[in-house]
Length: 412
Image (cartoon, rainbow, N blue to C red; front, side, top):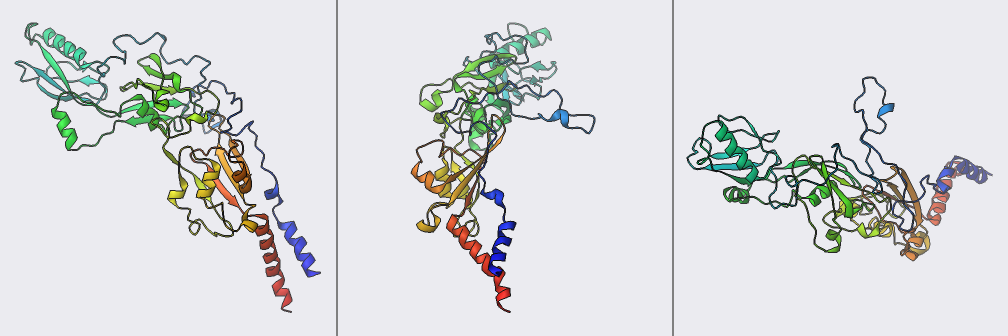
C-alpha cells in the first residue's frame, strides 16, 4: 500500500512538461538547406537612441541587427548613388590617407617644414605657419600638390621652388562600421599593429603596407559572414558613393580584388535569406572556430568536469554538425543497452528572425541518419547543447527515489 502511494506521489510531483515534444514558432530551423528561406522586411536604423522619459517601448529595436535584402536597393546617407569618381576610386594603386596616418614632408630648402607628421582626428595636416590642411581621403601625391599651393599662397615659396614630396611612414588603425549578414555587426577596429623592431624599420623605409586594412579584414573582425550572406554583392560605401564587391573568390580560390579601407568607410553584407552550406567552413571571411555552451549532466558523468567537457571541447571549428558536437560533449558512447536512447538538445538563435529555436534529437537517430541535414544540422556560434539520460536510466533513478522514500517507513 505504501509503495503504491509513493508511486502516485512521485508521479504527481514529476514535471510532465519535460516529456512533451518541443515546438518551435519559426517556420524552419536555421541550418536547414532545402527550405525556401526566411522572408524579412528591410530594416532601418532606429531614429531614437535615447528617450527623455523612462519608457523603453519606443526603443525596442535599438541596436537590432540589420538584414539587408539583395532584391531591394541599399541606400546610403548620400543623395547620389553614382559610381565612385576617379578621386575616390579605391581601384587606384595609392591608398588614400586616413586620420592617424604618419607621413613625412620633404622639400628642398624647407628646414622649417621637413619632418614627420600625424594626421589628427579630423584628418587635418598641421604645418608651421600654415592653416591646417585637410588630408583625409587624399593620396600622397594629391596632398603634396595641396601643400605646394598652400606654401605659394602664403608667399613662403615661389612656384619654381615649391616642390613637396609626401612619404607615408605608417598606416594607422581605423574603425569601420560593418552591418548586415555578419555574426557581430558594429564598429570594427582593424590594422591595430603593435610597435616592434620591424615597424621601426618600416618607418625608415618609404611607403607602408598592411594586410589588416582590407575589406575582408573588416568582415572577419565582425566575427565573419553568416551562412545567409550574399558575398558576390558586398557593399562598400565611401564618402557617400558605393560599389559592389565580389568576395566569392576567397572561398573558391579565384582572384579577388580586396579593397583597402580608409577611415569613414562603411561595409554592408547583404543577406539572401537562405542558408548556404558552402559558406559554413573556415576561411578568411568566415569564423575559424567558435564557442558553444555544453551541459553533460548524465548518469555516467555527474558534472562537466568529470565528463571532460572543458574549454577545448566547447570550442568547435566552424562547420561542426550536431553529431560532432555531441561526441565532443561525451554524449555518445558508453553502455549500449542502457545509454543508446540518450537525447541531445540544441538551442540556437536564428540571426534572421532573431527567434530562439530548440530541436531535440536522439543520439541513435543522429548516428544512423547523420547524412540528413534536417536531422543533423550545423552548429552556430553561441549555441547551447545539452544531453538527456536514456529511458532505462530514468526508470532506474525513479526506482532509487522510491526506495529512498520507503526506507524510513520500512524501519518501523
